[in-house]
Image (tube, rainbow, N blue to C red; front, side):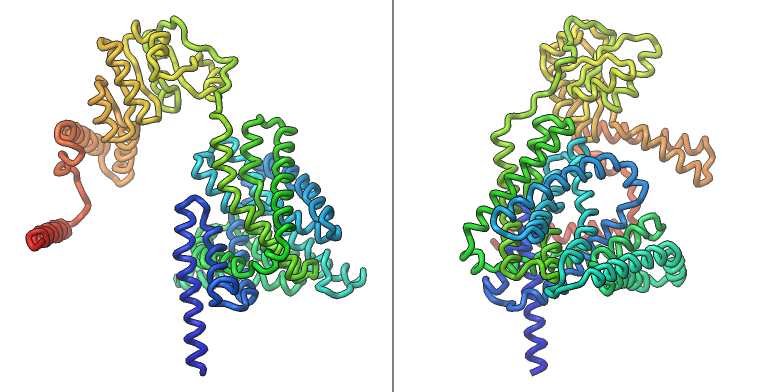
Length: 604
């Protein structure tokens, strides 16, 4: 019988791993995100799918450790210095949006006939946007490093921070299904504060010496065990004091955020965090009660529409009040209209605290999941219906009969450096760029930059290409650089064209487009760096300079071969670090593969 039980347990583990491995990459590939993949996989293998699991709550209880470790990693990233540098957006914009949404979404539950406290907790859970979905979409849209992307990240960061006090608030608002007196409630608050204080003191004075002592032993597995001990020990302390495990893990992470062991701890925890967090989403998917949803589908539909519409309106309103343009406000409202993964954690805590029952939790969980599924579809709809952004150029000058010794197209970090010796010598420069914000910023440093697209013939004429002694292509877009080169050489064949190249292949393409000179943007900086490395290693300065100069000659020879014969033509001139034996083995393996391929073709 024991063997049978162990075999069944092993089957369930294999089913869980298989479901996650198949669903997460599949959903990510079609643009719906790995989180939704885990949720869908959990639904398929759970009680309302193939029925491999009947007790999803038991798995959910274990999988909550994934959320605990997730918050520990978030805490490690919350260095006080970083929080301070982003304080305006995090604690200004983030707090304003979260508090406004909490107040507004509470109305949804009350309007559906629920008491105030459950309505508040339900609405607050929906306020917590899905970090996984929004971060993925920002990355796919190339908005991570933009100002609008940074503002959204700041809001997400505040929501990640807010989950900790919100979990504590849920514990204090609930009663675990039992009546509690005021003195008991104040006692639980005192115990919680004492536990937090004890954790802070221990983290400040004990954790770093503890890890230094373990690091001196040189045993990697001990450091990994110690990292798990800190996370789980902090979580246990908070749980025993009546607070959430997540709060303990988060505080431990913050306390270690300035430690020299931070990156090592993050690397040790990451595999456990990823697996357990995936397991958490699988368990949430299993917990979806389709019977309850079918019986209350009108409430689910009304909740999804009400929460998403009202949250979008509030987010848009907050953004406009704080001076954000209409386009960015609308995009932010669409991206952040859904509930998120932390809502599941908050609702699980609400069940334990006696605020929700199982049926209410099933309805709210379904509401969150449906909103997450709708978000990618809403973003696609937004991108198709909202017209492309038109650059605000009302205060910018277009080139018109401009004359300069040199026409420089693309005044970014590369073009700025190129301009300085030319200006110092007294040459006049006609500068063109197509980034309005950058043009305005350059004006503050004393530059007159005209707005225009250098790949348009009329802009080149207006910018003085016909009378310039040289045209410099310094844009950071490879395809745009080639188009500009082709147009310039066609319209102004006698004007020398010099271009910035991204890499060797791009340099060859530019030469084929007719440029008179090209340089790879990292070539000279890399050579200077290499020369300095040789000096640091003790080589004579003249020897280091000679070695670098020899490489220049070899590189020019190799490049000439590649222009004629392709990117691999000069391969024999490259110095590799593989040993001769390795090269012989590689060639032998390649020859054997070719022979086997030829034999297979002959047999076919």
